[in-house]
Structures are given as structure tokens and as C-alpha cells.
Image (cartoon, rainbow, N blue to C red; front, side, top):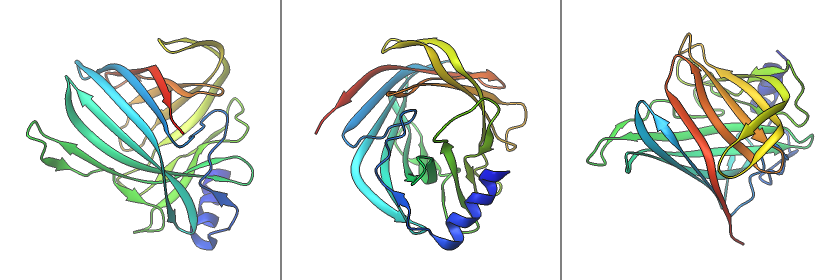
Length: 218
């Protein structure tokens, strides 16, 4: 795939045309913004807090914005993740890695499975959100063999969605899957100018997270 070919260029040549300023309208990451999602996962009520920080980190030559993600199940911190994103000169948003940890009820780390960093141990960045999504476009969002191999495909640019924070009849709908979990399929919906508003399992899982609030600070 074209996305996969582009990934190799990022890791090998570290082109300078990347920025930690991510303003793709389908996936804007303005520092100081906090997104809150509520829903359920595996039968438990969930609350997911995603905070775009003012910090950056250079990975494989690309400056990336640092995003903190905290998932609470039944009121208890279940997973904490740091994600790194960068935007190229064309407006594509690239995913350069994540550091994730699952916690037990005592707050002890039980797993860091899924952690990866572009340029390390054969891992490569992938396009998370195209600059100009088109129906049928597909690509690899991440690659760390055997640990992180998410893919996406654009299904619609005119999907209807209603969540507590907003509603739209022109939402971007994507399908996501990974060969590491055969049979599992998720759908994500994005609203232009907002970002991710709904994520839900449609096959092989039980998870739903809807956007309930967006807070912004300087």
C-alpha cells in the first residue's frame, strides 16, 4: 500500500517536513484541549480522558505532540497511555508510537503490551488520519510486528452520528481492525473541527465510547 511505502521513508530518511502542530480538521490536536468520553467496556462503565499537552518529543526525526490518555473502568484507573502524533506538510497525521500500561485494582502495572516507538526494533509510523479522506482509502496506522498492527479503511464521509457533545450528518466513518485480533472490527466516527466523537465495537468485542465534553485552555 502507498501508506506502507511512505512509512519506510519516514523512518529511514526522517524528512524535515513534519510538525508537532496537528491541525488536520478531522483530527485536530490543539494543546490544552481535553476530551472526555463515556461508555462501556467489557460490561463495565467507562470514562476516557484524552488530554493534548503542550509538550513535544522528537521521534525518528519528527517532532511529535504528546497526548495523554487515561481510561477508567467503574471509576478505577485501568489503563494509562501516552501517544505521539505528527503532521506532515500535506496535512496527513502520522502516529509515531505509544507507551501504554494496564493497571490492577491496586494500581500496579500488569502489562505494557502494545507499547511501541517508530524507529525502534523495526517499528514504523503510519498515517492515522489522511489529509483528504476518501471513501475506500485504506492504510496501516502503526507497525510493530506482533504487537501493534492497526489498519483503517474509510467507509463514508456522510455518516450520521449523535453523541452528548455534538451531532452531524456529515461525519467521517472508518473501519479499524488488526491481524492480531482476527474477527474484531471497530467503527470510529469523526466530526470536522472536533475530531473523534464515537468509537464502538461492531464485531468481536464489547466497547463503546462517546464524546461528552471538550474543554480548552490556553
